[in-house]
Each structure stands twice: as C-alpha cells, then as structure tokens.
Length: 115
Length: 115
Image (cartoon, rainbow over all chains, first blue to last red; front, side):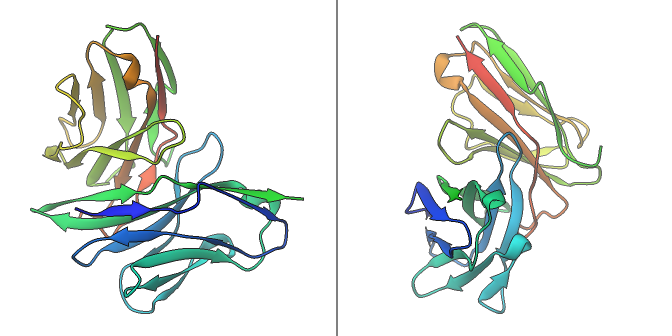
C-alpha cells in the first residue's frame, strides 16, 4: 500500500518570507510525485510534478520541490510568498498497478500568508 | 468551455433520495477519475475510467455508489439512498494520458449535502 503524509495541516507565514510545505510518501516501488494547489471555491490545479531526472523540480508561481528518494520526501518550497499564495496545497503520488493506476492525495496543508 | 465541467455545483438531498452528479471532461481526455473530498480532508479516490471502461472502482464506499461513462466522454456518478455520511464535495478529474504521469485537470466539484 502507499500513502502520502503531509505533516502540517496549517502553515501561517508572513508575506515575503520563505516557506516549506512537507510531504512524505510510502511506496515500495517507483512513483510519480505531484503538488496541486486549491484556491477557495476552485478546482485543484497542478503546481509541479516529478517523473524522473533532476530531483529539483520547478513549477508555476515560483514554487519548487525536491525529490529525496532516501527520505521518501517531496517537500515544496518558495523563497518569498505573496498574499495570493494563500490556498490549500496537496501532495500526491501515482503508481501503476494491475494495468491501471490511481493518484493518492495527502490531507492537505493550508498555507495562510499574513500581511 | 475548455475545462472540466461538473454539475450541479451544489446539491441538497434528503436522506434516502437518489442523486446524480455529472462530469464533462476535457475533449479527448482518455482518463477520468472521481474523488470524494470531505471537509478538511484530501481527495479520496473513488473510481477510474479509461475511455468507457471502468478499470478501477475499488474506492467506491458501498454498493449505493455507481459510476458510468458509456461513450467515453461524459461521466455520471450516482448515489442511491443517500446517507448523511455521503455529504462531501465530489471531484471529477480528467487526463490526456493513461500511464499515471499526466496532469490531472479538475472540475470545481459538486458539493452534496444530505439532510
């Protein structure tokens, strides 16, 4: 079985400060890794994804994430946040099994950027 | 529109009523997923279609839940004899790819409240 753990349910941070949202996964096989963002009353949208290759992945809106296989982590970072980054962030993994595949999501981290 | 469209956006049902939730994916997208998102939680996998074939329905919580995608495009999630624990946001997502590496495009969801 595989699961996704987001260690922080809420992260308050002041505007222009750096932020890290943590994500750990458990899987015995290779997975693909994703971060999605959900703004209020909107659907989830992709921030970035890791499939293979360079472990540092850059996404939209200045976000980046680093894949660490030994620590089974995929933490999301931004060096300087804006008020508009206030949203819910979800880490997800996908793995193929028995000819099909599914995406498994974490419980989410609510990022609140303070003025 | 060019995105994933879900209807209705809001549905209030009395316990015991049947409901049907519709998802219109992006044209040409092979894969279609249904997720259930309870308040304060991450999306939980319900079922997956590849074209018209339902390849995985392991996440459907009971036999009261039924999903179909008869022509490989529009999908309907039906819940029979609704219960209060069915109250949640039901998310539909589609993807052009089928091998688990693709971006999921989400609709805004259908919020079901069972009284």
